Every structure is written in C-alpha cells, then in structure tokens.
Image (cartoon, rainbow, N blue to C red):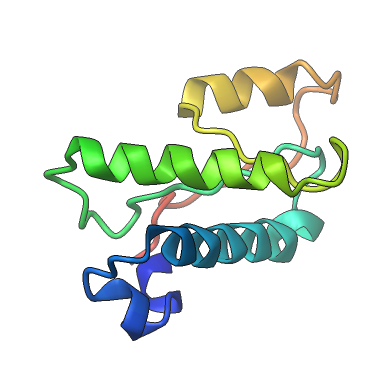
Length: 115
C-alpha cells in the first residue's frame, strides 16, 4: 500500500498536515511516473485503497486526498506535468476511449488487484 511509502514520522497522526500532504503528493506523482511507460495513453490509473484498508473511510480521508490534488495543481509547472484527479473507474475508461485508441488493443486478463 502507498501508506507504507510515507515516512513513519508522518503516518503517526502527524499534526503537520502540510508536510503530510506534500509527502503523499510526492508518492502519488512518483507512482504515476513509474507506471507511465506501461500505458498507451496519458491516463494512468492508480487505485487508492487497493489494500482494502479503506473499508470505513471517513470525510478526513477525502479531505486529505483533495488537499493532495490541490497541492499538485499548485506546483504543476503551468499546467505541464502530472495532473492528479479523483475519479471513478468508469470515468477513467471513458477518458481512455476518448483518446481515439483503436479498440481491441492489449487486454488485461487477471485480477485487477492481484494478491
């Protein structure tokens, strides 16, 4: 899970929200860049909560995620670079279909979350 990539000092109920937001932003951007070569479009899917640890998500988690996305917009270099967006799987696939990629490309044939 991505939470393991955050320094323990920030995971333990850090009162420094700005530092935590920045650490989370850096992890997400690094994850997107690492996965980029495997995708045929500029749309990169990063499933958050993929360890099923978020079964009882409250408003604070959404607020933190929105803060991370907002911080990335602040530092994005004039609209260039990685754009983070909270979305749904259906919107992601709709965006990929909208790129004009021909249908019938490589297909994934396994568990989406393989463990």
